[in-house]
Amino acid sequence: MPKLKTKSSAKGRFRLSAKGKVKRNYAGKRHFMRRRPQKMIRSARGTTIASAPDAKIIKRNFLPYGF
Image (cartoon, rainbow, N blue to C red; front, top):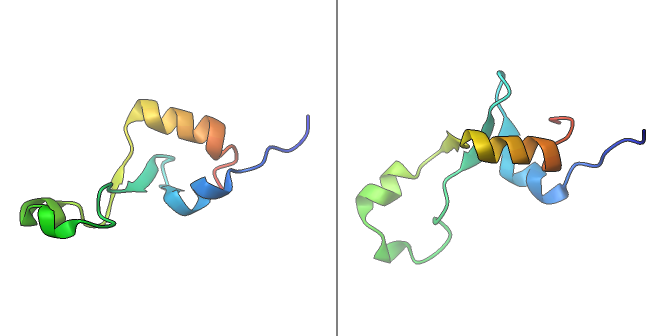
């Protein structure tokens, strides 16, 4: 069976933790920040863990070897 390619867009958006969970950035922080509450801006800092159903799809289709 040939090697599988990693999706290039996924390389910049997702990382795997040491235990294999998918880390991702929070959504909605690119523009229009003046309309968002300060609480939302503060709580959207850093990274979070993707939900289990989404992580399964990401690992299977986009990150086959978990780079």
